[in-house]
Length: 375
Image (cartoon, rainbow, N blue to C red; front, side, top):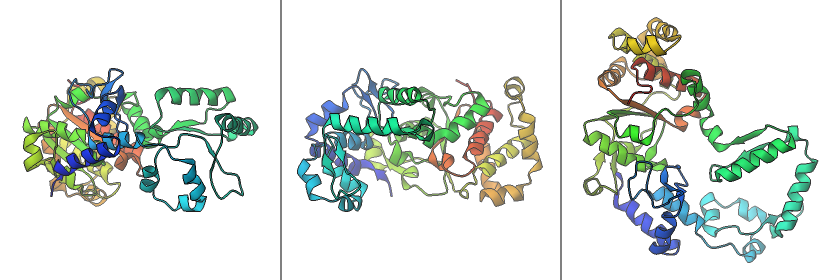
């Protein structure tokens, strides 16, 4: 079974039709923006559906889906008169989104059964009154990933003016473990690769992520990597069919016949990534595959990592990871032969207990082969 393909093409056409037609959708997609679901470039302030590498056209069904939702008509006042709060709470997220866009402030008091529209002046007055009466130390300011950078900046500025640093956003919720883990390994909480780096890589690890659903445009990059002789290793307790085979709509051959995505699909125990990565380090150490020059010049404290790997026996690694020594050895062998490996991970790593340590383990694996900062 392969995902994507003509089903995705048909889905895009249906979404475009529901949003006012292909012409309206084409115009909206070419406007200055980034993907509203994964933030991959679509031209930025210049627009034009061009990604950071200058490729055109760059979009996927997820970005079309998000754009179509924002292009819906306004919800009428009659809708809120018809449906009670309890009826609205019983609706699914999909049902609520299909209703349309809220274009005016709504308010419901403690005894109200319905939302009722109010003016912007009244809404701002109510919010201002509530904020002014709340102790700043008991307040929390949280920004959505769907908000603009400008809105996020103003929100945190208002919080600081009020006298609190209780500020966060969904990016921290998703990748705070990454930020803390990477900062302790590389000194920076941000990624060390760009989109262009992927086009030069010969091996990509996908750990605890499903780009098939969440950032489908990456699949074309992985397809290109495999066609030039590179490999993709998926580490995920859950089998994602799209990471085994996928019909990439933007590639004619793949669209009709499908494309293999992963060269190896490894299913560790949930939370077993750390043990698996430790096993990789152990194998690299046993086979003299550590980049000693890089480690000696750039990695402080790596002897502690090395000692942990040497002192942990294979039975313990197999038990905690749920992966056999033979499979770990095969992953490590492929990694040893790579000259430009990239590690990718997502919520399957950061939203599991011990996520910070797992990110550190990923960083240690990259250091072991001198992959950090490598062209």
